Each structure stands twice: as structure tokens, then as C-alpha cells.
Picture 1 (cartoon, rainbow, N blue to C red):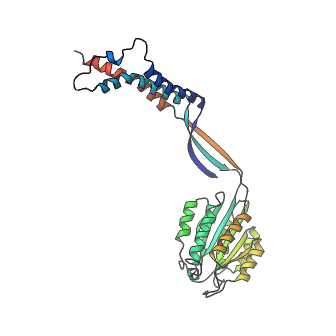
Picture 2 (picture 1 turned 90 degrees about the vertical axis):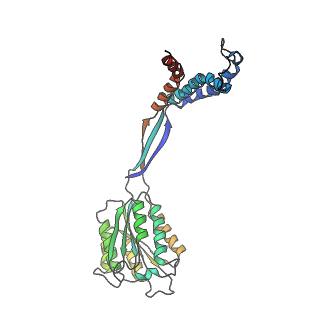
Picture 3 (picture 1 turned 90 degrees about the horizontal axis):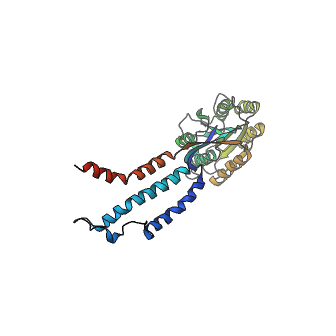
Amino acid sequence: MNLLAESFPNLADPLWLVLLALVPWLAWRHHRRPAEGALLYSRLPAAPAGRPTATAAWRLHLPFYSRLAAFTLLILALARPQVGYAWEESLTEGIDIQIVLDVSGSMAIEDFRPNRLTAAKEVVKGFIAGRPGDRIGLVAFSGSAVTKAPATTDRQMLRFLVDSLQTDELSEGTAIGVALATAASRLQGSEAESRVIVLVTDGVNNIGEIDPGSATALCAGLGIRVYTIGVGTERGVPVPVDTALLNEIAERTGGRFYLARNRRALDGVFSEIDRLEKTELEVKRFVRYQEAFQPLAWMALALILLPLVPATLELTAQP
């Protein structure tokens, strides 16, 4: 499983960079100690009319600075700059998790800010982002259940699907048994070391072809732990959370039951589940390098040849 891919610069022989200390010294020496036999500026013929003396002086220094730049580029080329491509691969399986989220109409109640469903979606997204080594799927339910995403490592897709959940997008009711059975069927063929369902609801099972007891037995038989979370305060709730049922589901499958009366408590519940369901991943890092010194060498050659261009042009211009 690919967990990380990145590119970064690297130098294969960085000790060559020590020679860069010569560059400022050579420039200083060029101006302070002209080469033996070189003409002084005062001995140069006067600049042609219309051409400033500074231009003539600049042309005098052009060959030196071209060679100095070429020297610098050659040092950088000798240091062998490379572009490295690295990725990490998990050598152990993580945890397969199915998030089962109630989207019935009562999840729009505003005892959580701004409402129960929106608060639950934000917490679920944070939970997903904090588990890069696990495959996570999403099931939405009310009177029926639908798989929004099978277990996947595509965090961007999961975030989009969680954001897109709306209340009353399915038939009315709360089919906890059907939702559990749907999530369990998605985990049935999983070869992960651990398989987990996190069920979030604010109601009681009141519809569905599969009763919660049968769905719980299915999860227990498959070795799937179920963490159940009841959300909502008692204020304004048309149907109270069935705490007895949620507690029974959790106990029979080796999970835990939580009751979250506010957003802070809901955050704490998911944080605790995150701590309980941790698998230490063994990761191997791979790196592949590509040489990148060739452009520097070509630029150095071009700078070495640059001072020859004016002389060549003058020779070709002569009759």
C-alpha cells in the first residue's frame, strides 16, 4: 500500500561545493591585481562617439565573468545534483473500518451546532484524516442503508462523500439492523488484521428486514468489533436514543457504547476509538534518483564559448 510519494533535490558529491569559496576570491583578484601585460583602462583608446565608456569597460570584463560563471556551473555539475523520488510502502495490514452514519430527519435537530449531522460529519472527517494507514468505508442509513464508499485509502474521495451526506436522502425510519448488516457485508472479505464498525445514530430501530440482533450476531461471527455512539440531548428529541440496544450491540461484538450529549463529547468519543484501534505499521521507504547535472554542464560550455562570439562576428563581417 502506497502511503507517501514525494520528490526532493539531492547532491551525490556535495564536497565539490567547497570550491565555490574560490569564486569571490577570483573576482576580487581580477579587479585588484590585473594580469601581467594587461592594458590599463587609462591606456585604452577613447570610446567611439556615442558609446559610453562604461560599456567598453563592461565588455572588457565579459570574458572573465563568463569564465567565472562557467567555473561556478562546473562545480555545481561536479556535485551531481539529483532529483529524488521517494515513496513509503506499508509492510503490515492496517485496520479496515466502516463508518455507519445515521442521516434520518432527526439528525437535523440543532441541539448540536449547527445540527447533529453536520457536527458528526466534521468529527468523522477528522477521524478519517488521522488514520492514513487504514482503509475506511462509509455507509449512510435511515429507513434503508446504502454504501457510499467501500473500504479505501482515498481520503479526498471520503471527505467529499462525507460532506455530501444530507438528512432525508433515504426513506424514512431508522434501520439499524440493515445498516449493521450492510457494513458487515463490506468487511466480510477483508484480510485486515482488525475489522471495525463505528455506528453513529440518534434513534431506535423501527424499520428494516434485518433486526439488530441478527445483524449483531453476524458481526460477532465475523469477528467485527462494533463501536456504537448515541448522539443528541434529550431536549427536542422526538424519539430518544435506544441506549440499551446500542450497548448490547457493542458488548456482544467486543466494542464499546458511548453517549455523546454535545459536540465536545462526540470529539472525545472518536478520539478514544482512535486510541483503542491502533495498529503499529511497519513501513519501508524507497528512493529513486535521477541525475540533473547535464543542464549545468551545457550552460558552462555555452558561457566558455560566449566571449568568442563577438570576435567570430567581426571576422565574418570583414570583406
